Image 1: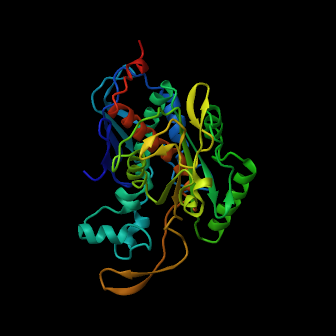
Image 2: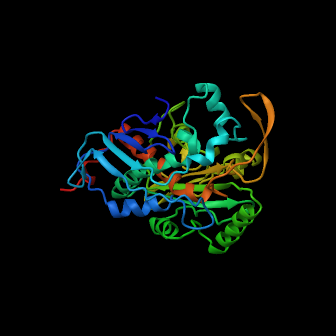
Image 3: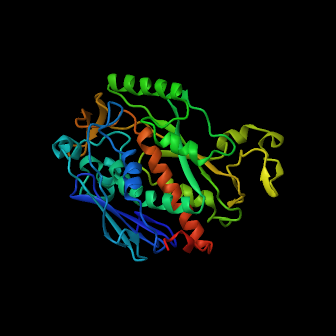
Length: 368
């Protein structure tokens, strides 16, 4: 199935943006783990729109309902089905898009593939709305990893040339929690204010902007992953590219490494408290597809939201003539800040799956 990933922890996503609801089926969570539902809701609220002028005005409560897989607040080892209702839809805003596809959106490619039968209201199955159930499942995975002293955190690294500070060599859980507690997910509040100004300026101009997100996973054991096509980069990239609007992923310093000499790009090994470590982490804690024990670090590029209020050039699919498109409805001037917890969720689900595939005994995370 195309909307599924994972080996031992298998995640499948279902629903459409303006359908009755959306959800995920997670098969493989270890049994006996108590889910902190309050912490899970706080995590999911970071993804929500409707909170301010920086995002869409569509406000959904996004309360996950556990249809199966949970007994007395704990995972029971069976497939965990999560459902989230769609309660605030305005499908009339999308009527003209049936004939005139949005530039840089999946409207046209979906029309060709499914001959006009796909439900594309609000973006349908391609909508960022589908990241809500990913956050629900990923939020549980984050809680499980934290019990193993593995922590996942991310921040908005840049928006339209405004740059936040980068993570240090070894960011800690306290920093991740500090960022998560902010209305705008950055390390430097000064940079955050400048980013917000850029987003509001784009909205005022009836336009949109993209952004980059830096994510780190700390406490990852060395030796996870396999060459050549099942490495940690491969597994993360496959899931990250499933997030709407993601157009690029780079690990460590990524493309910047191609402009360095080896003496600058290499991460010298050293001993740290009796363990092998590295003095730098330009390769993102992964060598040959296998973790080194350094934090797994990567950056994701989010493109500008295709749905903008400016008139755009497109075509009429019924007449096969050039046409002008005017988009109505509620859309984000920048989706990158809302995508930060989604990146964390995907990273957590992949890393938990990798641990399970590697034979790690996670029974100690269950409540006695």
